[in-house]
Image (cartoon, rainbow, N blue to C red; front, side, top):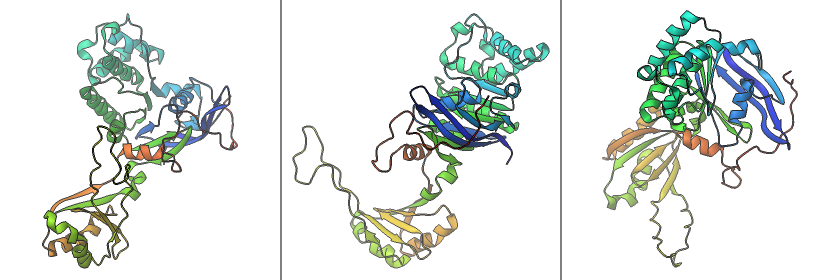
Length: 369
């Protein structure tokens, strides 16, 4: 794999022995949109600032565009939009792009042509000659993305690029990033907007307490949770007999799963203003002859596979039973579900505390000079 970012061991310890990053390993392929996410204090911005040499790491082993982290000449090939960026308020949008292009050593003829193109791309042509002081936050983000692209970089690093941008603007930014990817460039995004990342990214990494908890494509990360839901039309009075009917057709011995204990014991008085908890529809579990798990709750049958071919025998059995199939839906965890799973302590069921976690054993590695 041709890698734009290849980090093997990145660590940062702040004063007071706060381990913000603990041996980060991360791979970003050239030509992909990669999303970095995590709760507040997980170390996302620290990692981005180390990559951009804004702060000094305790340890950094890895490469950016084939050169060691911190290699100054390589930064000319990287476009960067920091979080909470500020531009000179007396400049216009066009002047801002040309100013930052000049800092990146773009020649003057190219500056004017490039700034005009990017103002069109980010939807700021009509505001190009207005001062930055008149811009909304969303307009500032658009100009910010434009300045990150002025030097025609091979890698674009965006820290919260859609913060404060309205839905139309977020869609426009997605289109811009897709065009950048089609040109073979790499986009690295740090964002809290999970729905945006899910639509834009080829792969993601989730940081939790200074460590990479998950990394990969969303399909790969959710492979174990993928299933098909089949909804059948069943009169209410026939629901109790449905497990037996389907079990006989499918060769499955359905067993009813224990119902979860109610938060309020049966017969206990309800708190003032509280409503009685809704009745739980029984859940029946079983295993198909090919080893796939199968569950039935009400009129919805769930099968533990992402392969459509393996669902066909079940559909045939439902039709033979005279049942009407209303819907067949492939289901997987959303990025939000995946995120919540990664940031939840499995021993307590509670979200991990914000900030850095306990330090793990130090691995060998060099320190950036």
